[in-house]
Length: 264
Ligand code: F6R
Image (cartoon, rainbow, N blue to C red):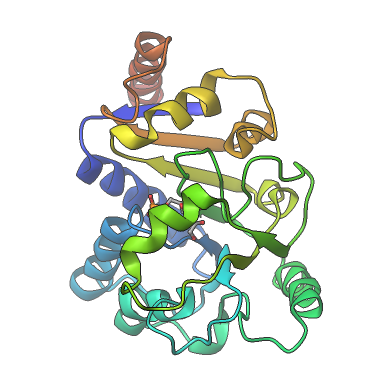
């Protein structure tokens, strides 16, 4: 696991942007795994800017989102499909038919989940998967105790997650307690994973993710078992790491190595 500590949330978004742009340059027809929530918004804005000012194209890109609320249609303002339209898809040149979000209004959610898995396989698998992380270490809506080899399925949200996400719903608005989410096994199949965590509320989760045991109690800790996972966090989210100095040292060595190989 590569651990990158940057100063601010904006720096974390810029790091993510550079990684996504490099991926698109290397493979314009990339399959991208996307997340919702507050964390990726700045990164999506940076990608929109790259499209508008540098002509970066998403015309050949295919996307798969991590999760969706069960019971919400895609036109519901709190649905994750709606979020993606508003925060990214409506502002870039992606073909809508190439964007996938689990169907929260499917007549049979289990069938929809199985089909979602198959669609990912049919697209050739995910090249780069973006993740945020919950305060409790969840990734997607894989809450603590989720199977570490799970596939896309219906999951119940914890009270903590429901409370955290209540900010997006009006006081008298129906807030779902169930979701469709990629499984942890699905996420682990991505060829590359980028987790971004910002703010002090994520510090405990990041300590458990990076330095705790691999455990379903902190689902994000499974990334320790991924051969190509990058965890980027700001200083606030890194505040509880015991080995922060070492991770910083590793990054300085990487820069040095890169400079040397360019010079050579
Ligand atoms: C959303 C998702 C969630 C969020 C997590 C953090 O698609 O997969 O796991 O990434 O709840 O949310 P924020 O970024 O709002 O703190």
